[in-house]
Length: 355
Image (cartoon, rainbow, N blue to C red; front, top):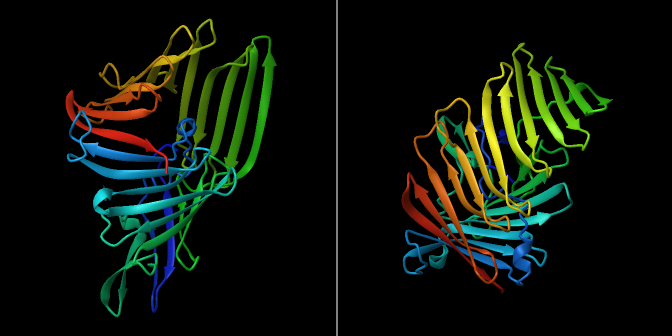
């Protein structure tokens, strides 16, 4: 699941006062990756991955830190993640247990042990009791003094996602809307127009707040998407239009995607390159409002696995490069190398085991 913004609404009762506030937009990294599946490891009957981090090109246990441990079931679904500063020294920051209830409903159980360095500020609230400042943790601790938080993920209406977080007593404490609080449309309708060149599908929504949203998809005779546009007018009258124009090669592969605004100014230009087997081997994106030649690049090998990722956002004066290496026998990812502005920084190492 991609890293997104959310709005958290808290309502927790303290005696003798009521503390209520809106917490800064935040989603917990790793913890909310509730639907990770790696079927490639089940081919070799692996069910756990140990991850290490170090400033060396070749693995050396004495100079690397064991920071993560992942556990998978027989289908390759992640069911537990343990992360910390050094797991070999029992320095655990948190553990997460994952459970899939249905195709649209998931659950996690997170424990933060004493001494964790990764307890987020969003699970605390500031209040005053008897004229004294108090900082309360919203979640209770178990008998081992671990902060415990259970989360339920509702994904039926993706991209709208709702996350409910509960304490040990199964009391609802926090509600997250990672993609924003949904607003039910006042009216919603769709139209389709067919011509000898293809079809156009238009979806319209209006809300009780006075905003209006229109989405238009244009397809060719082969049912390939040729153009996508989003038109939005909020309740203040501000209008926004974004169009994406798509180009294919003769084999039907997507090769160019240009995104422009309502004044036909280029927002971004994306290029896709394939080998003779129609496998994507390179992706390049540049933002039209910058002087940077390439803002993002991905290189893939002949079987479609990424070997290089390069990023230079317009708002940073830093180029980040990740290089990926795979095991010759299994083809599984074995090492990642991080570079900043061309200088080597660190490596991550992955070890697959059966327990």
